[in-house]
Image (tube, rainbow, N blue to C red; front, side, top):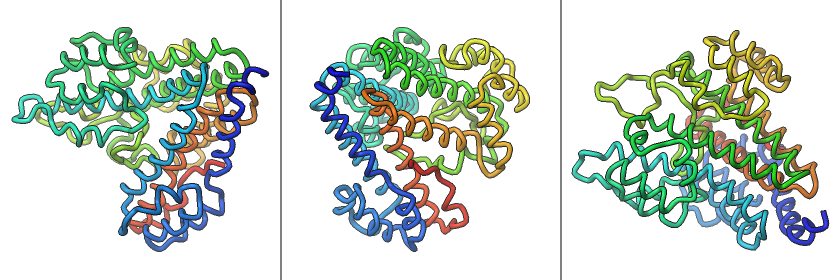
Length: 392
């Protein structure tokens, strides 16, 4: 406790100040009453988003709003990371690794797509603009000009902090054979396990608070992988009211399906299905469900099988029950709500690094909320405008 206060007390206080600036119920009520997307700027100028919105030209778009909200999150992160001492500095670096995975998979997807075209390297700056800023790292520009998966693989091993995850899960041949979403899930599996191990080494209270959060994230991925592999919702129902696709905005990258099977396979699209025998390979190898629950998930072919697999864990049993009682919600919507509860609980634990992780997950959710409201206003879908998850 003494060392935490001495080394990280100022940044912990700064973080809790940032948390007090999250949008309130009154803020959300005002935003949902806006007549136009531009009207949202007027209200957001009275919040902690003022600096990033003051110079945005009209008319605003949902894209520009998403970019501004992301810029605010990045500013908050940098203000904490730059003066941080170890082990907080390393902990904050781990937060960026998830974004790096998304960026590298995006670059791999474009490398595969551009192969055989007149411009195989693509537009480097345009590709970098689509990457999440928290996932940028020294050497990422070199990855953007890779012309083959083999070249990309070697560049990742040399230039990326994620080299150990690639070495542990993938070979050079995998990049040319696997679907990009399978690759993403394999990398996330190794990343989450490594992050969990690091947090356990930090001792209590971080090991307890982050242990619970990361176990939840691992189990959520296992459940989502299972459900998405069935192809049962892909054509008619998106992954939740908040699943708005954005560039430069990190969404939940999950295995899904291709609504139209192309004549030529495009591995940028989600795979049409995932055989039961292959699920276990990409399930995270820790969490409340592992190993007995994930073994049952591997065999689940419908919602009854899913409920039976998670029945021993009250939190997930409640999530499925909530979704069953609210047909307008998807499983992912219910998981968003549970994640917010977990993150708010992390702030109740003092002298823990878990609050730093929790804050940025809450900021992600807040961005989803703001963009969702903007989309509903822009598309005149006001009957759905309140279908978001508040962060307080």
